[in-house]
Length: 358
Image (cartoon, rainbow, N blue to C red; front, side, top):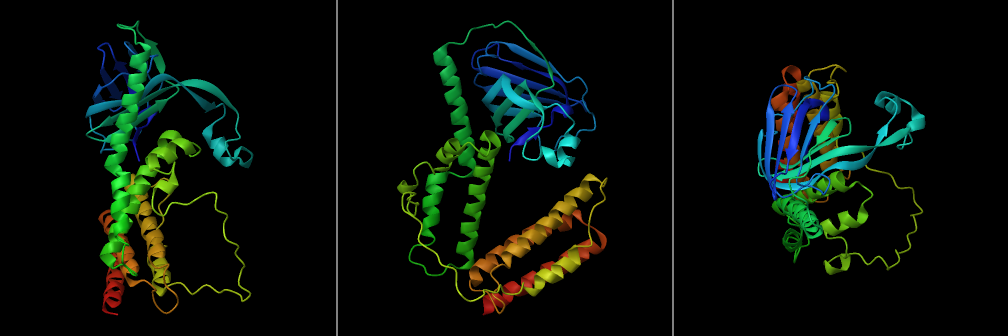
């Protein structure tokens, strides 16, 4: 997902495009630090050739800026404009979240212009700042952008997005390479499954970025960037004109197998840990890490049929990934929770060894 900078963490800043083809973004953070992005490319017409200055009316010095955000950026402009139209609630967010009648974005709002800064840097990939409450000041243009130059700026932004997405998952060659894992094989081993899972992760990362940028309903744009705009050109693509086969439910009652015993044991080991509502940041991160361990373990053991696993290689590969989540949680945890996590870790290793030997 992108590095999204919270508006409340910014005191003031500016975007300078006085030199054609060069855009410099400066953000003065409320905690006194400065973020600078030196970018190739131009912003949208409303800001091209100008200096846009912005100021937050009430910045929050306590607003967290993630330590992974670099203070120096070098890269290319994405979409940069001060006139993005957004819906802004006219009631407090707490009321929207707490009142069921506002479910599904059914809340009172007004339209506002929003500042939208997006760039792609070597240091942090895609970086986004979106804010509708800044006080904006715009200078007269040092140069006027032409229509061809505006089209070129949009194309450059699209190219920057494509390069960034291909770093996450270069969709066509990686999809073709992944297909080769299955050629001539009835069953994959654990290493093949690991490669397949890594490919799935990279696809999910690419898809997540597209959802963040375009929104869940922008099907055409997302499909095009994911290679789904013409599914038949990919082997195994679905022909949407072919009707789905008839399906008749079985007459006998279908009974799901019992959960793998380790799932129940993991609940006992981990469910006692819950952070306080006002807990520290590390406590919240620990809770998230432990939640991921629980969720990933349930997924890894979902192939349990009550007596064993139908696909040993897949189960081993999935359990390896659970070990990674446990290592992350152990690095954050302490005391009894650490002991419980390490106990769970050893039990997972024992299951892997049993599966390899059977």
